[in-house]
Structure formats: structure tokens, C-alpha cells
Amino acid sequence: MRAPPWGYKGYILLNLGCDPVLDQNIIQKVLWEYGISPQLISKHTDLLYRATDGNKQYAVKRSQLNQNTVQFWEYVYHTAHTQRLSSVLPVYVTKSGALFHAAEESIYYVTPWIEATSHNKQTQITGLFKALGHLHESTRHTADVDIQESELKFADYERHLLSSYERLSQYITLFESQHYMSPFELQTCTHYVHIDMIFNLLFDRLKTFIAQLQNDPAQTVSLCHGQMSLQHYIYHHRPYVINWEKANYGHPMNDLAKLIQDAGSRHDPNTTMWSHSLQTYFDTYASTSNERLLLSIYLLDPTAYINMIESYVTKGHAQPMLEYVHSLEQLYRRLTLALHLVETIDEMNREHFEEDDPQFRDEI
Image 1 (cartoon, rainbow, N blue to C red):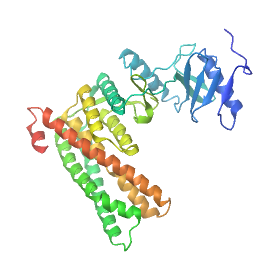
Image 2: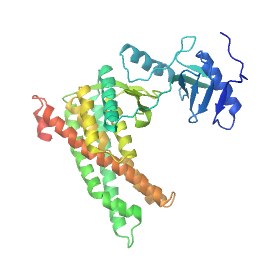
Image 3: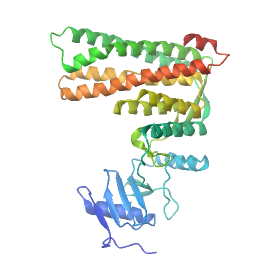
Image 4: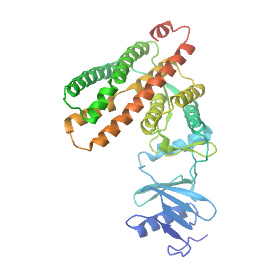
């Protein structure tokens, strides 16, 4: 089969950037490497194109992969095949049998273009948590942890929290001393009762977690997405996770926490729905009490919230007041969702604690 000439009249390119001819040539050449003769291409984002050959629709991604990261990206798809991880949206193979094509100093890959099907939000979110739990469970293995190094890291984090808590108290005192508080300052003072609760919960859980490290030096690592968020998820009759360019082997609770934090920042969370979804994850992934405790620590982390207040105090009017207020409210929603989910985690720990771990039961 011969490649169609680049001036093929049946080919239409829509919504391209400042250099449509360059885009046309590159994307068309990439698609031809897959044996695809496009009839229509449209630019969805700066990195994503939608193409059709009159029969099927394709997503063409100009990735951020490089020679150092593309091998692990390929490993993800080989693992998805061998482990039957159906939630990993597959990629097409080029005519030469490769999973990607390099062109113009970039790495491109092609997947099916799929649209979200109409399901209620509970079904979509629960499906994602179940898929993530299956991914982590199917690829898990244990690695020994240097207890002394881990204790030092968590001790440093505890000192960081103490310093943040002191600074927050100073900011609250400063704001309340104002004759007229700005909307941001009033907002911060209104949040304080919950933020204070979060700090106290976090200090308690850190002490418990550090104590348990002595009894459980092994750490679970799993294949992790690396940038898990609702933006990288499509429910098309079943759950699909896309964009595995930052995938790595890491702690599954970190991957899960990123998803929950992203959701809490972007949406007014339905706490019942998220609690149910979290339970679905743990029904799929066989977690330990210490892993669930670590998830609580990740979720309750107030660093981004404190940084936003410090940015306001030190930079003043670097951005409009409305943007400060909106950003702080997003971070506050994320932390209040964390409070509700920590209650769910505590309830799970009470129900599933091991008989040989009475110390944890007493702490909870």
C-alpha cells in the first residue's frame, strides 16, 4: 500500500495552531506509520489531535516522553497485556510493530478516541476506584525499608508541620487584629476551626505511623499512574485510564491520595459517594492498617493550604483577590473531604484491625 500524497484532496485539517502546514504534515505522517489514512483531523489541545479515517476515530498524542522515560511507558502496556489490566486504554501498534513513533524530536502514540458514556457519577467514580485498586493489587510486591531513614524523613515532616502550625497561628492573629479584614483574611479565619482539627489529627497519626514502622519494615510498591486525576479517566461502558507518561513503581497510597486530592479540589464533593468509592478500592486492594494510616497522612497534608496563605501575606496583590479566594477555597474543600474520608478509614481500621496488633486498636 502506498502512502497518500501530502496534498491529498480528501484530507481536511481543522482548528490547528499558528503553523497548520507543519501540523498537517507531522500528524498525517504519524498516522501513516500506523497504516491510517485520515480523512479529517482536528486539534483538541496543543498535544492532542482527533482523527478519523471514515470508519474509526483515533487520538494522536504528542507526548512528553523522552528516551529516558519511554521504556517504562512501554513496560506499562506490556504489563497491562500480561496482567489483563483492562482499564489501561490500549495503544495502536505501528506497521513496524512499535508502540510509538518518533518525529520532529517528539514521541507520538495513537489510541482509540473514546467518549464518556452517560452513567451516573457514582458509577463512574466507583468504577475508577475499583480499577485503580485492581491495578495496585495486580502489580504489588514488597520492598524492605530502611527504618532509620524513614523515621528521619517523617521526623523532618513533623517538624515542618509544627513550623507551619505556628505560622498559621501567627497569620490568624495578624488577620484578626485588622480593623477590616479582606475577603481572603476573613475566609482564612472562618476555615481555622477545621484546619486546626486537621493539624491535631495529623500529629496523632504521624506518631502512630512512626511507631508501627518498627513492627512492619516492609513496604508495598505497585505500578502507579503518577498523575492520577479525573482528567485522565474516561468511563466508556467501563473505566479507562489514559496518559501513562508519568507512570512509575511507587507506594499505591500516594497514587490514591493524588486522585482524591484532585477530585476534592475540583468539585464540591459528595462525601457519601467518595466514602463508598474508597471502600470499593479497599475491597479490591488488600491493604494493611499501616497503609490506610499512611493514606490518612497524605490526605490531611495541609502544606498547599499554608503555602497559599503565605503567598497572600508575602506577595500581597500579586494576583486578584478573587483568585486568592478561589484558590484557597479549592484547597479547603480538598482538606474537608480528607476529614470525612479519614473518618471512613478509621471505621475500616476498627472493623479490620488484626488481633496481633492491639496497639493500633488502642491508638484509634
